[in-house]
Image (cartoon, rainbow over all chains, first blue to last red; front, side):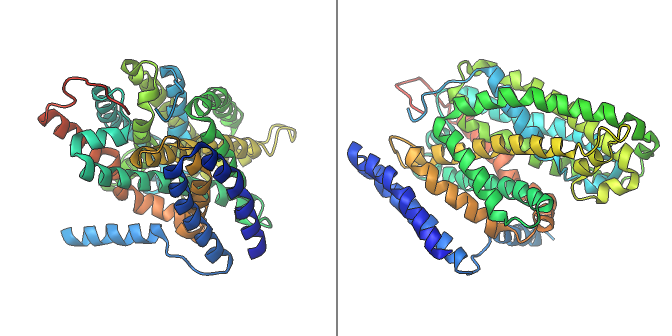
Length: 71
Length: 364
């Protein structure tokens, strides 16, 4: 499964990167690389069975904390 | 300009219709209002129109700026960017909540299929629409809405014989606090999310006609209230405790053992609507991020953002019930600053500072 994820990411990155290099869009390439890396790492961790923190749970805790200030 | 497409006010109204009705096809967060869900839906319309008025007033004040540009102009470059980042986080989260909602729904229909299959299928379809821009998303909405309205009315007619209108009574036995809680929850999930259009208004061919979408609000509210009343009339006291109320209601349709299993129409409608809603929020996120980082194109962000939205939709909730609980209990409060707090605050600050002032080569 992990090999499939790595293969899919490797194949998907090529056309976009080539197009950005060709146009000399360096800033866009840097942002693309940063987000792509974040997406790749999180996908690999999920595939390996790691439990990533849930943003919704964080939001829930934040709302509960805000409510506790008023009660 | 990052987006070259233009859409008309009527096309925008179609998009608004889908943003409002999308989730209601399977789920309305109106459990506290019980059999008065239909009334809560109409009550939420009032709150939703107020939110919409604030957002359109803001958009008309800055007709050539998206939300990112407005935040920069009103709060200054640093604070403006922080506010914009918060909005982008909110948009990407909504895209992931909706993606998860539809994947969970289909996972109940096809329990053997891994949820990630539905997630990838939908997010990649949306990615294709986002790459093509707002014009394509708006045109898809124009194609879909008439089918949805037909679907609503067709189901209503076929269910008339199964309705027991006494289930809608009595009108006064739901505590006011529970009723108002439902009103606000419905508004936050359905009408309030039109705040995302602050990323779209600059691409409207005539911003002065943005309020044509009020018609979409009213038609959507009427159809949803009718659908909620129908669900209660058909399912009775089971209605408020059913997970996918509309879906369960449509399952009841049986015309002479010939017209049955029409719930597939609901499933198809939900796919189309969720596709548009996810695409709009996904588009707002990538366009906004590209503007925030001053990129020349948002296209390179489309694919990695699709993966991030998918990852968020997997890690946010462990089950459909948990997602629904979040939508009913936490989301109405979490969304409040984004749907009305910040837009209203921005409007007040802009008024106090006398913005936008005189035009001098503004860009979105």
